[in-house]
Image (tube, rainbow, N blue to C red; front, side):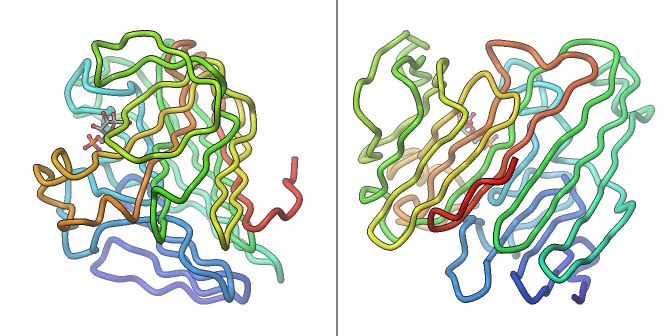
Length: 270
Ligand code: TA6
C-alpha cells in the first residue's frame, strides 16, 4: 500500500484491492474504486476544493446536525480538518482512523465537548463507522454520493414506503415500488430497511446501514444543479445521494452510525 499527499489535504491510497482518495478536511472519503471496477462514489473535481467550504462528493459527514436548521448547513464536521491517528494494512484491507474533538471555535457553534472517531476500511468493499462521544443528543448523516452512468437507469430498493418530501413542504407521502430517479428528488425515507440495493445493468451495489433511522435520497436535477457553482452542467445525470441518516430519531450522546458498501452482490459482512 502507498499513501501520497495531494495539495496538503487529500490522501491518495493505492492498495492491491482498491484505489481511494480521502480528504483530511471532513475525513471525507472522496473516491473509492475497487480493483478492475469503475469508481463507485461521485465527486466534483478536486479543483473546487476550498479550505473551510463543503466539498461536494464522496461521503461527507453531517454532524452535529443534519440540514439547514442551523448554520453551517449539515453541521461543521465536514468543514474541519481531522487528525489521521492510525493506518493499518492487510492483504485485503487498508484501515484508517481519524479523530476530531471540540475546540474554542466549535464551542461557539455547539457548546459541548465531543470526541469523534471515524474508522474507514477500504478494500473490495468499504466499511465506514462514525463513533460519537458527546454530552447531548445530535442528528447526522453519512451523505454518500454515488456515481452513475445514467441515473435514470438505477433502481433503488429497500427504502420503505414512507417518506417526507423536502420539495413539497415536508409532506408525508407513500411509495410502494422501488425508486427510479427521473426528476429532482429530496426525500427523507422514515421506515427504511437496513439494506439498500442499487441496481443497474452492469452493477449491483448493496448498502448495509448501521443504526440509521432514515435514508435521504437527493438529486438536484437540471434546474437546481445549475445554481450549484461546484457542479458542471449535465453532471446531475451521473450522480445521486443515498444517505445513512439519523434525523427523526436522534443519535444518543454515545452512539455509532455506519455504512458498509459491497459491489456486485458480494456477501455483506457484519
Ligand atoms: O441531503 C439532502 C440535502 O440536504 C439537500 O437538501 C441538498 O441541499 C443537499 O443535501 C446538499 O447540501 P449541501 O449543503 O452539501 O449543498
